[in-house]
Length: 200
Image (cartoon, rainbow, N blue to C red; front, side, top):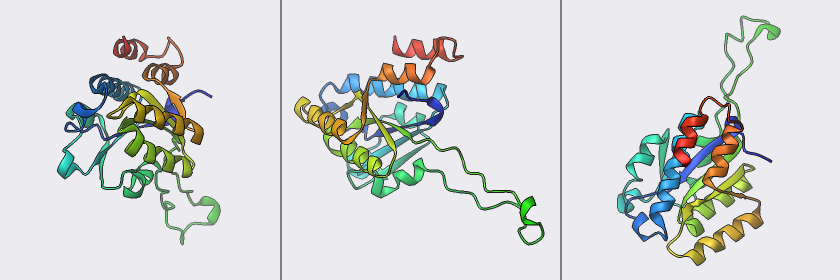
């Protein structure tokens, strides 16, 4: 099973400036998150962000925040209880037209935005906020793809334990380059050169 850009959404979990210096290999994790977000922009993949207790931990990295459609503040460790699933699932639109004046066969049916069930997740800390968000999205029947080189924790042991648990729960573990090239699918894609420049 390959990722499809038209069915994907990118969620960037808690890349907060006050937190990143404490993350093991934090600079590389942040660089890969920026690459993912830039590739998503080039390929029309929606990008969402979350910030854990932003009044105390501050905002996300400014470059990442600028690439997000919306950044969701949260107090739960998982972003699901604070409204992430509602952002990821477009609401159904009410039927168009005047239902009283038109026969049923002429009424327009409600069109909702296309479903994007593949959620690509990157973030910190891998064993807390990212893990809990991923597990709740899996319970909510999303396909979850965790970008391992764009996730981090304060210790490698915690980060790696999160990956073991996520894989056991059904999340796909991928890397930044896997995501970018699966979204592209072909070297003939119009955005190929721009995305290639990001990963080189």
